[in-house]
Length: 174
Image: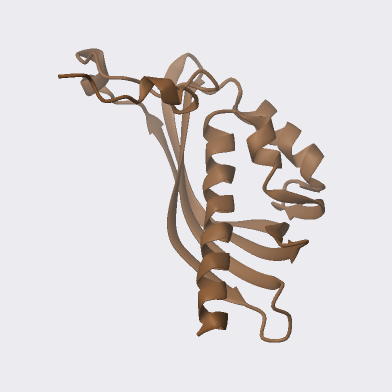
């Protein structure tokens, strides 16, 4: 039973890495993004194969001129190495939404695929040791956002997003 509980805790810790990765991308928070990788990790996205520092810089530069980004996690299958309790493998489905401006037109770019990962626990801490991205499909089309044209709703931001200001998350006094 203790081994099963340890795996459940490890899966939760690994899933948190995936969530931090997505937050780092969407909020353009390089420190949060970079924190999910071991220093000697390797990132292979086909078009870029490099270490996590160069990859973090690449990602922040690639997304900085977008109007908005929204990365969603789907199926997350995390499996442990039978021979090494400090190694796990992941297949993490994602949908990545990017609002850009292409030739003066607001454009939606949606990419769906999977991250294929190897995680390693070192000194009791799980991090990504290897990540690759497999793209399964994409769609690009002009934006159609009439809801936002007539709405005063809160909109997602970058590092000035409300998620960083927990003092705003309060219960009004009655």
